[in-house]
Length: 384
Ligand SMILES: Nc1ncnc2c1ncn2[C@@H]1O[C@H](COP(=O)(O)OP(=O)(O)OP(=O)(O)O)[C@@H](O)[C@H]1O
Ligand SMILES: O=C(CO)[C@H](O)[C@H](O)COP(=O)(O)O
Image 1 (cartoon, rainbow, N blue to C red):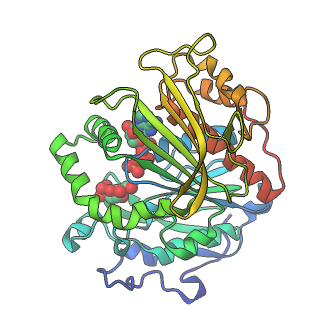
Image 2 (cartoon, helix red, strand yellow):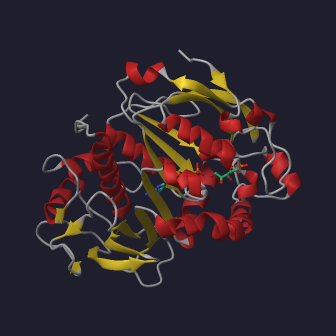
């Protein structure tokens, strides 16, 4: 049940044009609403305090793939509608806050990455409302038609993930977020993933894809990429160092950076704070070509002290990940083998056999630990 909705909470007119002087907003932004009262869903679902997580990356960098892994760890089944809403977790795509449809952006010559093409006021008001336990009627950006559709109802949830191009761009938005993650793909890997998806699933030509990446680059570098400088965790996905002049970009080197200041302890290999290179291939870990190499150690990332866990190469047998798990500490698992079990649950998910899958699981486990810290509640391990 939805109680009274108000438009323009805190005196904000959602339909007003953004300060940057970009063209007028879609009328559907003026239709956006925030409930005046705390939603009855809060009591009905025993939600004490919604946790808001921000996941930022460029388009096609694996946000949805990663968040499917997070849903698995939180043991939430999510609906298949525009916005995945589950019994525990909701995933809001921030593209829904684009101010104009595709044609409008083309006419105004702005990319979707330009802050002027996004309604940060509405984004902030709506995330704040969800954190306060209020329901919202949020606009929808329809990627199939390129149009902005009428608003949909989103109710608060135990965990609300906001994913997209700019979750941490706006200072007030960033302040609302309880945990922040940035997926940082090198150009080579980004191009390889985008080509594979956009040609297979979206009917784009190779030239199209390369032109789109180039045209987005200045705004990506100006507005999206800088968000990585101060987040709780970064997953860097790079070409392997194990194959000289690798052209296929199928073997990946993945670095998980965890800010030391974060409320949850950093994962470490063997000995906390040491610098360690580990080549585990041998009797306990089967390695095909080109092998596997781990690195762990402290580092500085922009202004933050971080610890880095790096995995280069592919795992041949997922069940042997228990050997790797034995040597990792502070993983936030609830029982010995949980990390391996999570990997085995989705053996065919993209990245399962390399560092991306491993780091997806480790970051998701940190999110769960953060949820438990914030709420004082326990989440049962999801063995399903
Ligand atoms: N770890 C991975 N290893 C290999 N391929 C991957 C990995 N993660 C994602 N991909 C592939 O990259 C493509 C983009 O992934 P995904 O849809 O998750 O990205 P996204 O950031 O949600 O994209 P968008 O914002 O454009 O919707 C997909 O084809 C997916 O299969
Ligand atoms: O960056 C993007 C997604 O994160 C999209 O490019 C943006 O949402 C605009 O959509 P479209 O390209 O379908 O017009």
